[in-house]
Image 1 (cartoon, rainbow, N blue to C red):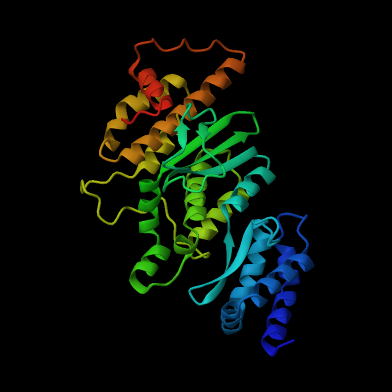
Image 2 (cartoon, helix red, strand yellow; image 1 turned 60 degrees about the horizontal axis):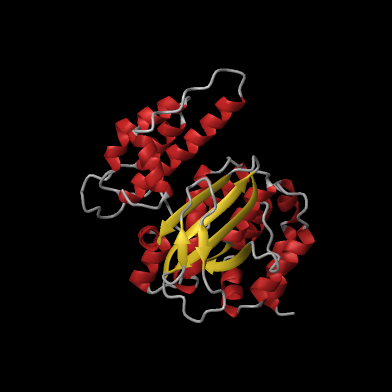
Length: 330
């Protein structure tokens, strides 16, 4: 055993007490995760070099495995140790993010899929799975044009989130990792694994509409900060063409805070025009309102109180919902 490997092995196993003190998933075994960590670092001379020059980052990464409750088991493909910005970081895959949501009971099932230009894709509404047809063994499905995430909640409801490739790339372009590639040619997952990052981007956006789970939120926060991924949905674009960019997050939160279907409808009518110059954010607000209205109606139907009458058939919001289900743009 080399001297560097001996040092790192000693550091990893010395972190056992800290690992156990922050463990959120008791099915994780320290010895196994420590073994996976050492095997990962041994497989790359560069990773081992970074590890020996920044030993504390290795300890931090191993501790984060326990705090988030994710495994380095290569068979699960949930998480990896990667050298980034002069340190060893815990990197969580889109599979790991979905597994976290399912492990906490928020979701029964989840899938993230790329859509290519030669595929046939039909959005059947945001509360139903889409129709996606393609030849699985085709050699040329064309360029990737979008990505979607469809999940089934613990209540048995489906939630579908879609992003076209321009939306994905707009978020990629705002990330610190991508800017480092453009400016310094410093490799990052956006370069080595663009498809996986597109799926992860969509999973991160979709998770905003899933039942809240502390472990998943912690994982996403970690990736955007200490993980060095630099992917921030709330960051303002560097140069928005209109010059008057509106932050959609407070609007989405306000829409989701409405207590009745009628209030949600009224909020949409009064505020959706503020995002008219931001089509992607306008679509996000629409999706959030639709999902919230569905939840409110389901609660009203099961409650022992009179339900609100359905809106008239010529209601503009209903027409808007129908256009959204058909996949038409605003």
